[in-house]
Length: 84
Image (tube, rainbow, N blue to C red; front, side, top):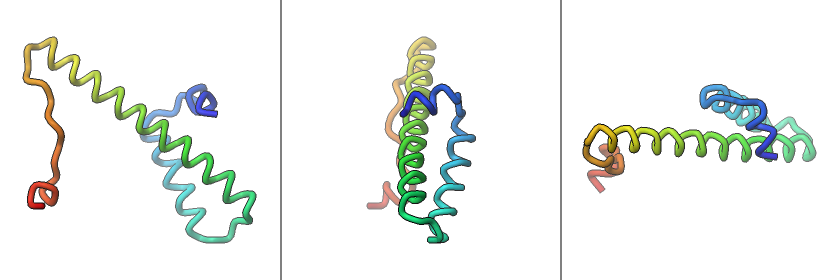
């Protein structure tokens, strides 16, 4: 079913917008079980699609930085992670 999202060629922003809309819809709690499962399945696919897009973008940045002789990227830490 991932191919359906790929065929739709959703960019990251479009996928996140749809995912946010699904979450809001599900949080209202007015869906029957069948609709909720369908929306949940779509949400899982959208999440995987977003993760793939982000991973692909990270790899492109790393390649570009290596080509330019830059230092390899390190993992990003938020301020709260650094204080732990």
